[in-house]
Image (cartoon, rainbow, N blue to C red):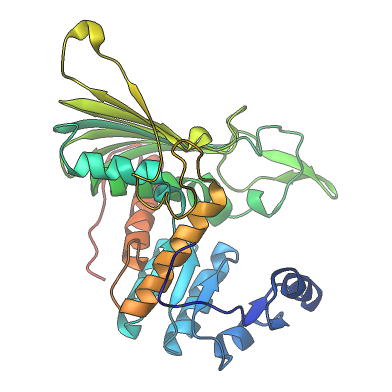
Length: 346
């Protein structure tokens, strides 16, 4: 889709068993399959590593790849804890190779346009941000327990929250302090041997203050009945406002506080070739891009980072910023107090 300087080849794929790895090899055209990620990282023909495995495995794989001097693209979140994120960011810095985190939703042409408009001052001084990442894949309490219902890293704060926190940072900049409430609504679910305890969170909300002074509210849920891909935000400023909803990812709603009051209202902007990265997929305005196209855009970005040697957002440091906010939110929820988000020079 993009005329990138580098053209990747699929050398080795790893999965939890030899059989599943072989299925992926045949399905996607990899040259070799393995159930040992160490063999993948060490393979001479592998020049870069993509980590798309459970959160608790991210750190070890990244550390090994960086030790071998290989660029790493890691799915969010950056590890299973703040300690993981800090260690992985330090390892990336020491290795001096390309590193990126998989925040794909922020790459839609519509959200790229929202970033441009805000940065250009089209909304004036930003006063308020509302963001949500809401889905309903565990809304039914009769659904059985799975790996997603066990361990903090696999709960809503580990799984969904990072995407919208990343969007908030991308659109408005650093978050200075937060307060939060984090809940498990369905304490148990059907298991193989009766009821199984749910050991992580179903939903959470967070108030925040941005370094710019703007106020914010973020909500995350895996039990939001009816929501399928509720990655949505509103941004209000002194001269205008924006609205976006991932369930309608090719539309951005813009309000400009200008002209006669009788004629004011939100304008629906349909993305097209005039917007960032759209033209590579389709020459027709309003025809739209999809989820897979976000993944292609971030693959292009990773190849660009490798080819140029220059950091391409979002790097591991940007992933660490998200991890710092999530960790602070847990602390704030436990104390039922506002907490300052720590800075980190890693």
